Structure formats: structure tokens, C-alpha cells
Length: 276
Image (cartoon, rainbow, N blue to C red; front, side, top):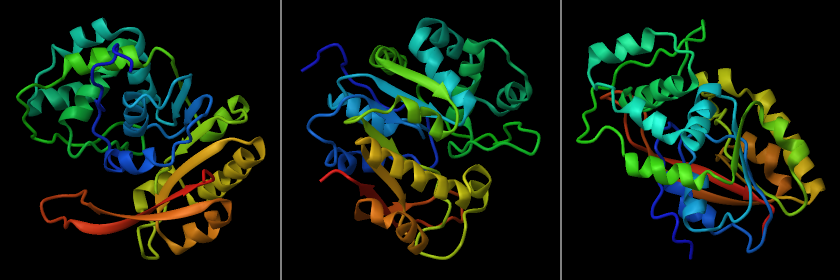
């Protein structure tokens, strides 16, 4: 066992995060694979779990379309001391939150610090921008005994040493993927679970056309001889689009994102993989 990583856990709150799914995904991991790729990184719960249980032994290429998210990861990897120093100056109150939210920050360390603070103290850990591209999630009124777990941030920074972060569309990583590499794919869900509705906000981020592009990407992975694991909503349209590319496992979970009147409901999701 590697004694250099004591414990690492996700440091961001992320809507649609897969912390609940880590043990299930672990069951699909092949005994031997080369490099690891994750093009929809988000809160990073799957990568962090696989790193903790030492399933990832070689390089990891981690990417996302959200440039502020990737900047936060890059800064945590390369400048953890400066980042923690900046985070220590934040105040968890409404006035401070809105003041910081309205400020333009250029320095990468301060941008990462702002992003992490807003994520920690915002409503439900949602990332949302208005038509002008400005982050507009309201203050969450969530109180913490300790605002940031600095020990975990240091441990994460150490765990990121053999990881490479990049910003962009999922297809940008294609030329790096080789035979026997492993790709974990967790796209924004375009359709609602178990019905015919589209998820209004996610449609702006990841449309049905993007799901079709993703199916072509999975074809490419199969032709390249790479392993892949994909999570998605359990929906007829998703099954029709991806069902020929691997084996499907259906999982059920309880989920709620919303205000005080939101209901906790059972949803079904799928894991699709070419790993047998």
C-alpha cells in the first residue's frame, strides 16, 4: 500500500456528483490498464476514490468544459500553500459572499480561491451562469464548523502529482487515448430519469446533439481498444443511442436538488461499459 496518501476526499460540492456511485464503479475497473482519462471531471469523486484505493497507478488526464473548475484543480496541484492562505481569509456571510461574487478576479490563485469559496457557501453547490457568463448562484446560508479542510487539500495536492488537468470539450482528449487506457465518462444528463422530459438547464450545457457526439466518441474508444465506463440517465432514448456499445447495469438512487418544497425521489441511472 502507498503510505504517502493518508486520506483524500472531494473538496467541491457538485450537483450530479457521483460520490454515491464510487463503490459500483470500482467493480468495473479492469485489473490492468494504462493511463486514466476523465473528460467530465466535475467534483472528481470517481477519480479521487479510485486514487484512494490505488486503482490508478499511472498518469491521469482530467478535463472539463468549465474553465474555472479546471483552474481550481490546477492551482490546488501546483500552489496549495498559496491557495490555502487565500482561502483562510474568506468570511462565510451573505454580504461578503455577494461582494466577492461580483468582483472580477484575474490572478489564478485568487480565482481558484474565489471559485472554491463560492462553491462551498452557495446554494446546493450548483454551478450556473447567466446569459452574460456571470456566476449567479445565490448564497446558501450554510454554516460550517470549519470552512475548509486544509489537511485534505494538502493530501489532494500530493495525489494530483501524476495528474494533468485541461479545459475543453470531451473530444479534445481523443488523440491522447491509447489501447488499454481507461476512460470514465459522466456527461451532464440531457434527459430526465424515466420520462420524456429534457433537463432545461443541462440542455444549454450538453444538448442531445452532444449526446450523439458522445456516442461517436465511444465508438472511437472501442476501435482504439480502450476501456470505458459511462454513467447516464436510465431513459429509453439513452438506451437506444448507447445500448449497442456495451453492457448496461441499472442502478437506483434517491436524489433531491431544489428548494424547501423539493421532494426526494428514486431515480434510476445506468452504467454502460465494454469491460467484462
